[in-house]
Amino acid sequence: MRFADVVSTSAAVAETRSRLAKVAALSELLRQLEDPHEVEAATAFLVGLPRQGKVGAGWRTLLSIEVPAAAEPDLTILDVDDLLTQVAGTSGKGSTQRRADLLTAALTRATVPEQDFLLRLLTGELRQGALEGVMTDAVAAAFEVPADAVRRAFMLSGRLHTTAEQARSGGAAALAAFGLEVGRPIRPMLASPAESLESALSELGAVTVEYKLDGARIQVHRNGSEVHIYTRTLREITASVPELVAQVRGLPCESVVLDGETLALNDDGRPRPFQETMSRFGATISRELLLRPYYFDCLHLDGKDLLDLPLRDRLVALEQVAGPFRIPGAMEPDADKAAEIAASAHAAGHEGVMVKALDSVYAAGRRGKSWQKVKPVHTLDLVVLAAEWGHGRRRGYLSNLHLGARDPDGGPPVMVGKTFKGLTDELLAWQTKAFQAIATDSGDWVVQVRPEMVVEIELDGVQVSPRYPGGVALRFARVLRYRPDKEVSEADTIDQVRALLPG
Image 1: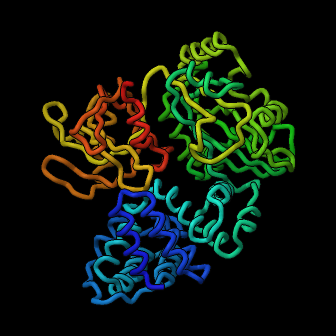
Image 2: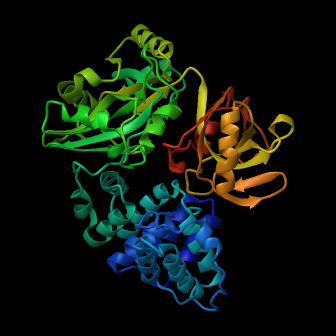
Image 3: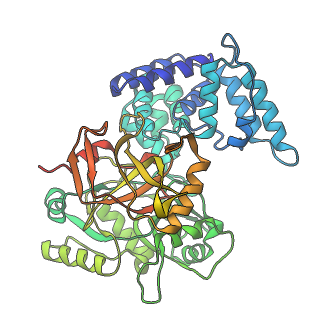
């Protein structure tokens, strides 16, 4: 199939706000594909995540390429996929020029819309994580398989393009064959915000209430002496955290998959700043700042997968294999005990508590509300869309942030407010440099950036407002921290922002 058909489908999806229309357009394209490699490549292109991952072609290389566009479409889906494979496999001396030559040859064969799509694909501008949910439904519709089966297979494989091809070639049976593989990360289960501790307890029934730590999510895999540790975005960090590897090797088991958090602590046991914990994930050797693991779920133990068991049973396994490293909390507390745990978590310097239904199975993403997070203040994870140049003391720095909430139907983030509050001198200097590296339009006053940075915002609430496209505005918003551990697909949605409206 022509690459132009993928490009036109992507444009049609971007032009409509209707989720049904998006699913229809994507599924129609998928139905027309017969070659398994085409299915995988097209699925990856349409969610903005090439099968090859980052191919090593950055802005500097791409901006240096200026070639006239082709008059008529000539490239096929497989042509472009082969190109990305070649670019990704280019390394060593002279690799930058070889990548540029490969890209130049391909762009010469591309029409104007195809050139634009390719450049945005390679620079990450097409990477709309929210579109994964729409594409999951499109795969189900295209190949007439249950959406839940697609979601589960995607959770276990971590690769939507592989899931799509299995749905095409083998249907529901092929999707059901996906299992948890020790050593291969699975997409994590996430929590939804609760209105209050009382509402979460009332809604979920029998629960466990645990500390919500101010740490970084980790997923631990062990098979014999082989250990792998992944972040919430499924990036492997094993080499950076030798103390965690040693701790996992010491657990009384042969194989295990654990879900948890890790953080650095002060001598008094209080958490150190989140940024210090995250800094360890980029290290290649052990440092003085040691990380301490806290586990809250067990997904596999000694040859038995536990994903489909209720949380109550998974916690029994967790206690058996990693009891001393369990996150603080209590099973089936009454209201007074739950409030005591929440107060204790806050006093210890943590974010709040998690309330989890004991009958819940493990499902990637925010599927329902069986896990809920309760914080003493409102916070939202939003996407930075732009920043304004500062005045006075902040002259020369990008300061006032334009903030967007994720569109759950795969459209661009929806702007919901601005803030310059909470920015330290260190953050101002960092974001000024970082934003200019991902700028898409640098004006005299506002610098537009690629929507790929997630920032955690504290706020007093939201109010109805015609000023922003989402119809709501943030009240007294201030920056808490950036979240390099989160993808845009994990930012809060416009629906979650609107849910904070009074009444």
